[in-house]
Length: 193
Image (cartoon, rainbow, N blue to C red):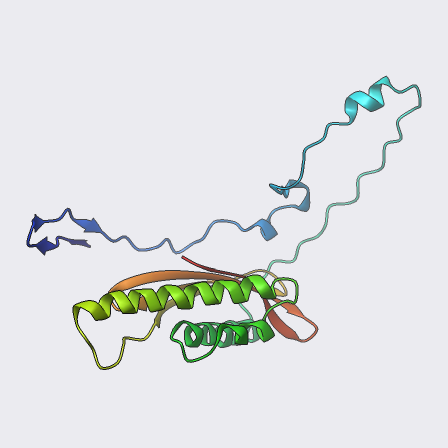
């Protein structure tokens, strides 16, 4: 779909909107553990130290390859947890709840980052609303609404979601990850784009 916006300065270039692909790329959880890399981990080569050493090198037997279970679809429990968390996030973005309410649905280690992302998103929504209220004064600001929700369960006990949000004429994206711990689903990551 193409659009051309006509303004007082003349027409602007066309904007092309293309649908997102139906399939998503592989996640880190779907790769073998041996191929996981971390940007914070240094790659150290100890081979030259072992080769120069007079002691015989002890070679550990490689563990048998892990049998990975394939998860098809998303469990009903995971869907319910994601919808509950997304609903709470939208209420925070709309200003109906304080961002601190996200803390109870987040892992303790990542709770501060999840709450900070929720606060940042709420502040961005408030700035957009203030900027739009200068042009015209609506009685009630347009709420943030969920347009689309895509779920993926890369492994049992973990669910990832991509959410398309709408605020007025702007579309935003939200990505999140929930993990199952001790009979409850807790957020480990939240990003607003």
